[in-house]
Amino acid sequence: MYKTILSSKYQIYIPKAIRDSLHLKVGQELVFIQDGNSLHLIPRRNIAEVRGILAGVNTQNIRN
Image (cartoon, rainbow, N blue to C red; front, side, top):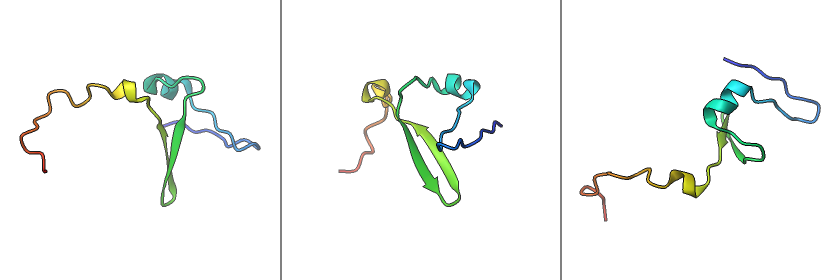
């Protein structure tokens, strides 16, 4: 678990280990999702990065 401090300009620092594991890049967009008293910070991915994610999926049981 990591912790960070909210600066006087409302900025946070993301620890290097997390940046590396999520492959975050400078200037990348992040999405904030509030869930009650929790905050989820999710990297926004380029559509090209998810290409092929459903390759091999069984399409026989898809609803029409």
